Image (cartoon, rainbow, N blue to C red; front, top):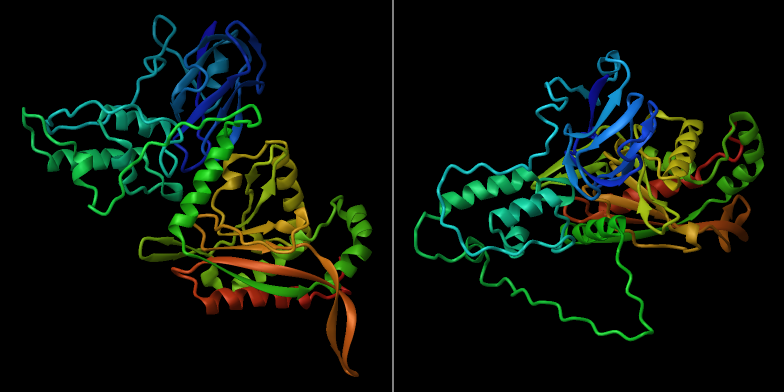
Amino acid sequence: MAQVDLIMPKMGESIMEATILKWVKQVGDQIEADETVLEIATDKVDSEVPSPVSGTLVEVLYKENDVVEVGKPIAVIATGAAAAASAAGPMVAEKHSSNGHSAESVPTPAEPVSTTPVAQPEPVAEIPKGAGSRFYSPLVRTIAQKENISLVELERIPGSGAQGRVTKKDILGYIETRTQEIPAAPAVQQPAARTSIPASEPPVVATPAVSVDGNVEIIEMDRMRKLIADHMVNSKRTSPHVTSFVEVDVTNIVNWRNKAKKTFEDRYGEKITFTPIFIEAVVQAIHDFPMINASVDGNRIIRKKDINIGMAAALPSGNLIVPVIKKADMLSLVGLTKSVNDLANRARANQLKPDEIQDGTFTLTNVGTFGNVMGTPIINQPQVAIMATGAIRKKPAVVETEYGDLIAVRHMMFLSLSYDHRVVDGFLGGSFLRRVADYLEAFDPKRSL
């Protein structure tokens, strides 16, 4: 009987660790190949880890809520055939020591390396989860506590991760610089955190306890809601938001869809919504104004050649997720429809893969789904713009004809574009939004399927 390690899989290029949410299988349970063993979560998406082999779960190396680095063994599976381990693929590492356990099967916490002696200040209390103005991973919080870095000091460390988050590399680099600046001395010294804060920095005031009566319900934020909150606050802190609006006549689109939706579904097996039509217009406008398809890195503007459109989708839990249509400019209207429907359905079923919510270059959100006529969306960092589509309403409007101006009932909607005024000025933002509207109004009502 062979024993193999179940390895924490790599869930995306930028993801280096994951949290164990739940062990679906327990020690002693029989497992079939491809059967789910546990559920994990990253800072982007929840996922399931299947077993690459059939066998029995004989050891669990981490508990629920533990954070494990990618590539670490997380469980041991005993198989009936020694060949199963070698055929299992990259997620399995065969155990080869005499006692049936590999040298890597015992988790060891990462510890920062510091060659410069430094006087130890008074111990700093553990930084609680969710504290501070941005998200800190359990690994970063652990390192901060070991190195006596307070929350105030941690807030001052520049982050190179997604949405400005502090990575393991950032905090270890800061620790190295910090120890070089603080000479070793036997006497008690002031903590380094206080010397790095400008005099204008407001003091941290503890939040008083809230007294509530029986008519108040306190609801703890779930993990995804905390991430969303952190993402939104960071976006507003990072980008000076400006929002422009334009009203669009989408009568041709509404009439075409009403006429074509049954034939479209019969021919392609997909229900066509307005979203792929909106995405098609956005893609065309990005080709005309490529600087809207960018991100910011310090004083540099990173213009993206790939057009990857994120589409905000509401989940049954009330939370929001943004799956991404990669290379949307390479897809036809049929291809966009299939991608939109597939991603939306799997988002609601919590079946998205981490790579499917990464690398977006522009985001579209539909506030009209909730009956809202317009909205001022928050930019999905590190992008520089996000567009919202409002509800389509019948309204009287002036129509220019060869016989003069007429008042007619038309299908009208508002588009709004929030953009990062550091790099997108009013001319670019307003021109791009107007161009999207022009493409929508120019939609051919006789367009063939």
